[in-house]
Length: 73
Ligand SMILES: [Zn+2]
Image 1 (cartoon, rainbow, N blue to C red):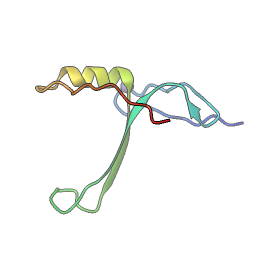
Image 2: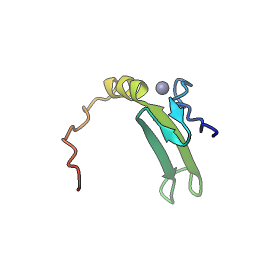
Image 3: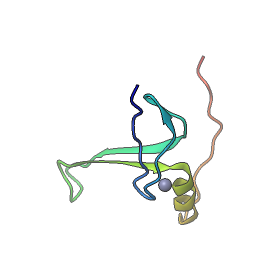
């Protein structure tokens, strides 16, 4: 069984995987830029690991909004 490779675009860290399961949480950005952007017609994809996300959040002028995640059963 081949392990998938998931790399953080910001720090280059390889996330822990087994098979096609990623054992670390991360943010996946998949942005299709549109008409009102300078990148109309381009789709940008990147992965940000949890540590980089925390570093990024520290640079925010307005803090992130935190809510409890309600699990749908
Ligand atoms: Zn990272």
